[in-house]
Length: 449
Image 1: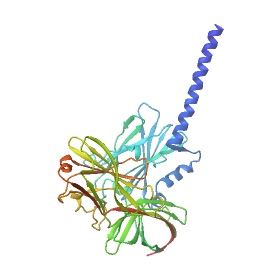
Image 2 (image 1 turned 90 degrees about the vertical axis):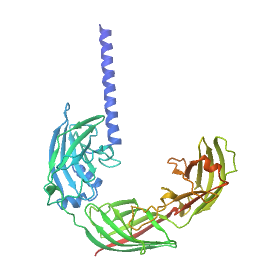
Image 3 (image 1 turned 60 degrees about the horizontal axis):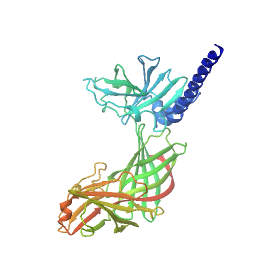
Image 4 (image 1 turned 90 degrees about the horizontal axis):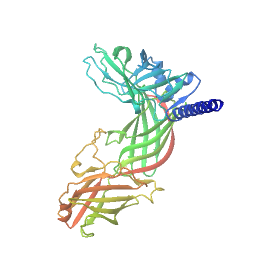
């Protein structure tokens, strides 16, 4: 009996030890991967301030409104509490927390208007918290926020009710809750936009950038500037970051909007400031432009037999911006041929200007006007494929999404009969894009307009 008792005791201790170890492993995983833990209650508010640009100014202007709705989560001892809402022209932020829980709780749902027509349901896995921190644990509660787009422009003179349907996701479980009615007049007000002058220029041998104005809203800001390159270039992306005199840091990696093509005037929308700066450092890393150069490639159809399979060619076709363009492979199938082109970037890592290709358009899209800009810019990287008679060949062109190096790989697929009926294939690229590495920092003074 004593031996049997000791055996049971050993089993109980072993199970208890495993449970303890698993518990600590689970808590560490939650903490390190998805959320933060801090015993200081003020850290919760600081988490929101760090995660939601402009929230401090929005609170000062009484634009963040209370909700105070509580929902019991069925068959658990958890409860969902919707705390506050900030509804502005760009985003809706719903701040919430779940009580008595030790796991990440994803708030989702959708908005409706009076007719109860569902506008959009949101699965919140990528929409709560930030990309690196999904939320915040404190005192057995999980705190986070849902960020979604507003339903529509709210008419304060209308009697329509805004309705929110909360949905909560806990691991693989989904919980639907009753809708809540929100009077738009209670949560939305037109935000003021303050205007300032900027007076800062950067000049190099290849370009001139002049920052001349700032619009500082509560939910967004806009920086206006002129860009003039060494050629007839159109800027389509800028990478930079701003550090204000109060220490705020704002990253920029997006396409600017062209206002006036003749004057080369642009603006770029950035995150709002928590505190309006008197000055900031503008750290310009690179800008990407649509240039006026072209790439011309000629392929002799007699270079290989038309046997099925992949033929490795590795033949140089053209050179542009210190980059060699190669015919890498040809692949023949039953009814089509695939051409692989390689932009060899191996020698360009130290160059200030390098070719890049994020988007491509076929020749039948030449008249396509970019909807991103108001300046009627032609689409970049237009691919035209012709036979030796000058007739266009209809082809599907795509960029290979995953590479093990920095090289660009482009594939063009077209009917085999087009290859067989011509002596040469001509592939041209117009409006090619390239990036300029700048690494320039300059101080920008902010003065009232």
